[in-house]
Structure formats: structure tokens, C-alpha cells
Image (cartoon, rainbow, N blue to C red; front, side):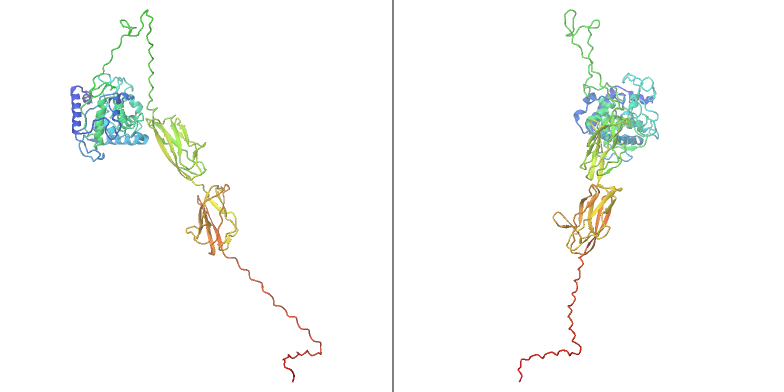
Length: 605
């Protein structure tokens, strides 16, 4: 361990010469670019990269600006640009990443993608920082749980060539009760780990020497302040927040580009350890950078209140009556939110399927969970819920947009939703955060009003003569759970069978707006009492018994018989023959009168 620390602490001209030569060789060989705004995840404004970036970042360095390895990637890339990063277990150990270390980086990427998808953290960035900080946990020397064995400790930050950071953890993490040291594969100083530490392997401990815990903590730290690491400026700010050194940024960028071009898994404990340590340098400012000389520190001006001090221009002199301008009080420093106060992600808080019948209230209410940068619930976060769609659905009170703050448990629940009268789909969107807001979208559905029973209200037989109209109207009533079902859509169809599997093209029919025969109607709706009176029904010339099937949303149905037949003919009454009056009987003893002979018209001779 002592030899390892000595290797990291070597300083001098040799280090500078080696690093400069390596950078020049990389540029000449077209190896992974050292340009700060390059890289697949750095496609942003190149002006944002470099020294000005370093001076505008407000985060404290995660490592306390402790030393790091300055070795640059090999001149030969592991694969051509754009190749798959899931290469087989083969190739040089320099390009490979130990199995447990690689798994931890990829797990951290997936976890952050779930809790903070807009950060777009690439695991290759974690690999680059892990390479520069600890040589991938000293070549993957970790136990089965991913914990470095022995622990990885940086030098004491005692102000002698490094930052001066007095002990903040009582030696709990770094075994040093006097000064802090950077700890673990990702080299967190104890004070930073106290705010950002994670338990990624589920063992109940936040251990900076565990690669899974450390990788996730590094990922969340890099994503702080609403950074989008697919933007070059944000990526550079994130790296500089880890260690405030432009040389550090260039080195990490080089390894980042190298790993993006391809890498592979190697067994734990077989990785190579870098040999070139950094030379501590002051924090970068506006005047620092490549080729910039050391900035001069202005000498303090003598104060007139101190012995020997000379009054400056405009200062008062005894007896001359002049006054010096009143100095303005310095502005108080703006308090930075801690990770526990910084909004990190927005998640679904268990909202179930959003479905309701037209005009009814939704059983489910939209709920979200806000987390801070450490992944813990965060209260007092304003969340705006908005209904989008044309179903007429609104929040209680008739509003399409409402804002609710999260409670102490990090959750915010939108008011009750009431479905409109139009069936269809719509969305509810929850938005929280400023600068780079987090958004969740929920799909919802309004179904048509339903009935579970449909019955005819009359019992009279429905009969019509061929070519005539049915004299009696068809009336039905829809109910849902024994209550009148108002506004229920009803479909009426002339069918050949009770199940309605076959439509009928003969017999009874309705008329459309143009007066043409139709045998299906789909625009029928029950009234406020759940009652529906069908339009007039007509009969064609086909006699017989036919069926009318009515169905509703919810499965209620009824089949009604319609009969077409000609009216029965009535037989005419028979006329009785006229009776002839009988002749009067002749008196008894009198011979009947002989008929007189007909005249022939011939005279007697």
C-alpha cells in the first residue's frame, strides 16, 4: 500500500514531460480525441468546454482534488469507432475492464436511467473516472461482493502539496482522525460520501470501498444540478466537479472516448494499474488553462488604519474635510442546496389503470413520488398535473390543470378525475422541476355509459301488413345495477337469429334521413329515465316472423319479435232465396179450374 501511494505521489518534470508527450502522440496518431467537447455524449457547444467551464462550476470537488493517475489510453483503439461495446473476453488488459467493475458501472447507469432519465449517464464515463481515480479498483482487486480488498486510500489531505481538509468522519471511512483522505475505487472524500453515499448492492451499508455503492454514488453526483451528460458543457462541468483540474478533465475525456470505441470484460484482479500520478495544481480559474502562466496574486494594499500605512486616493486626511466613499458590504454567499434538498427524479407512486364510464368519477387518482439527488423522498416539490384530450374529462372543480406540492413522504396526488361524456382516450401529464423538468405521462380511457339489463316496456304483439308501418312503437328501458341507465348507447339490428350472428336483409326495416331502408341503427341513446323509444318500423312485402335485437355497452340485450302478415279476409253473408206464396186451395167438391186453351190465332173453320 505504501508503495502504491508513493507511486501516486511522484512529482516533477518527468510527469509533465510524459503527459505532454502522450497527448502529442495521441493527437498525431488520431487516437481518441483530447478535445474537450468531443465524444458521442459530448455533442454540445464546444465553447462550453475548457477553462471557463472550470471557473463557473460551483460544486465542491468530490475527491478533494486529490492526486489521480494521468496515464492516457493506448495509441491503438480497442475497436473501430461505432463498434459494439459488448466485445468478447479477449484483447489487451489495458482495454479490458474487470468483470465486477464493469458490472457495477452498467448497473449504476441502469439505476440512474430509471430515477433520472434526463441525465443520460453513460457507463463509459464512470469507467473513465474509475480508471483515472483508482485504475479500475487496482485492476479489479475486489472480493465477491465488489469490495476493494484491502481498502483503497489516497494520501492525507494535509495541505502539503494537496488540499488541506481536516478530518470530517473521525476516521470512520479513511482510518485517519486528523485529515481526510479520498476513499475507495471512485475516491470520494468522507464529507462528500456522507452526502452522496449509496447502498447499491443491498447489503444495508453505504461503503465507499464497494464498487457498486461507489459507482452509483458517482453517477448521482455527476447528474446533480439538472445536468444532461449528453451535452458537452454539462459533461465537462460534471467531470470538473469531481476534480477541479483541466488536466484531469482532458485525461478523463480521453479514456471516455477510448471506452466508447469499444472495450471488453476481463477477470477480476487481472487489470493493469496506471503508473503516472498527477501533480497537484491550484483550482482552475478564468486565467488558468493550457499555456497560461500562474496568475499573480495581488499584494495587499496598506491600510491607513495600520501603522505605516499610506492613505489611498480619495481617503480622508486629517483636517481637509474630505471623506472617503463608504465601502459596500459584501454580498452574503448564496446558500447552495445540499443533495438532500436537490430535486432528482419523479416516479409513479403506484397509480393504477385509469378507466371510467362517461360521466362517472375515476376510482384511481394520479400520484407521483419526488426524490432528491440521493434517491430519498423529497417534500415541498410543486407538481403540475394537466389533462390533455377531447373526452371532456376534468379534475374535480372543473379544471384541466392543477398544481400540488409533495408531502413529507415525497408524494403528490392529483384531485379526483371526472370522466366527460365522450368515450375515448386521453392523457394526464405530471411535470416537476425547473431548468430540466421531469415529466410523467399517464394514459386514461373513458368508456361509454353501460347497462347490465335491457327490457321491453310493453307486451303487445307487433304486427304489420306487407308494405305497411307497424302501428305500435317499440320502447325499451336500460338499467345498471337496478338503477335507470341514462345516456346509454343502444344498437338496433334486424337479425335472423336471437344471437344476432346473421343480419337480415328482408322484412322489417327503419328509414334513414333520406328515407331509404336501413336495418341497423347505431345512434340511439336512452333518455334521463333510461328509456328508449325506437323510430318507426316499416314492413316490406315479405311475410313472416322476424327478430329485432337491441344491445348496449356492458352486454345488455333484448330480442323482440316483429310479424309481417296480410290481414285475414272476412267471408260475405249468403242471401236466402225468395219464398213463393202457396196457391189457395180450391173449395172441397169443386174441380180445379182447367186452364184455358191458348189461342193459336187460327180462326175456327
